[in-house]
Image 1: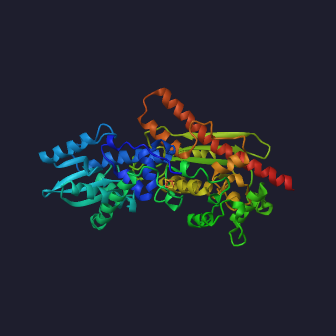
Image 2 (image 1 turned 90 degrees about the vertical axis):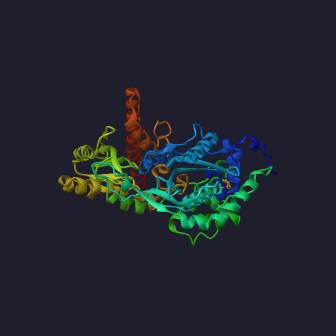
Image 3 (image 1 turned 135 degrees about the vertical axis):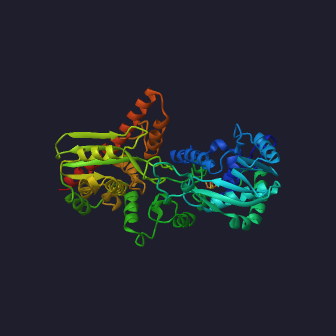
Length: 506
Ligand code: SF4
């Protein structure tokens, strides 16, 4: 049965905007829900919040490439009418550079980050905080080009400004080198007929008296994860084929559409990879599948005393430190739990940088001091920690030997889970520590922590750069320390659980 929708078109200033148009290209149902059932949207993820705030900062900085422009941004993003009027006025008055120039043609809104007058024509610039140009960015630029030119503005060129990840900052930030300006005029021109027909099609969708019917499909993830999955995917059962890792999305949908909705319904198990077979076995038996031999081999490589180590980093899009590139990981925090022997008490060490300075030397000096006793250093997913240590060794050659020693002692606690030596279906096909912990040590949880993910930790650390309120600073620092400590404590508990499993088998 179709659900009838009460439409509010008459009060809208525009029917389509850049965001709703791109949503419509992904899925017409998503466009309809976005427009008329916005409150059905899933909560905004921390990753999306970070992308949004990053994009804003980069957009403002890129204006310096074309200085002395006039900002036509609207006061409220709910009403672009004043912005469209101001843009018209600025063009008429002969303004050379306009930021957030807004146009409304046939009830479709476009707002261009930077518009620059050139030989009595105009050049348009859309700023992205990304380092590469995606298909969506081209579609976005093509819509903007269509609306701006249909509004009577002659565009000589249209560009996407991206971040140059090869740029290495020296003492001062060089804006010209930080950004890449890429003309996308050729692609944009080729897309104009498509944009024209899509606008007509999407307007028709928005005129429907009911939500368009659209089955779930690969469009739910591409080009972005749709934020109406909470609504459209609620009928998908627990332990569905979408939880089976190691097979492509296409294969998951092929199974689902052929009637194999749940993992236990999968027939042709022999043709699947080992990891998938283990997953299916665990779901069927509703218990852990353990490869004792594999676990024993892993433990034979681990020697007490043990360190459990975790780093947190900051990844600024705009490099703030000398000799760093955009999006380079800057280590700002670590937690270490130390256990001398099986029976000995846990000792905890930690470090958290002060926001604003360059923490790298202090970070490595503290870390080297806190890990100077012999013994294995356990991390969860060693790639990240090793990469950070290697970059610190390059930066501080005086510590090279000691850092190499620490790297040689690193063992990866993710290994037994990645290789499925221990697997239980509650891990939902993942070997991320956030899935392993509740499955193996349910009494321990990140849920009650104020900061409960690496992405949130990054945002919290960034917030300290601007913070003035001493209470807020102290509270945020405490939450950051608690989060990082939990990461290594979780590793200790997971390790102990594996030790118990091995012991009980002997
Ligand atoms: S979840 Fe999938 S089907 Fe539902 S609106 Fe989004 S893309 Fe469309």
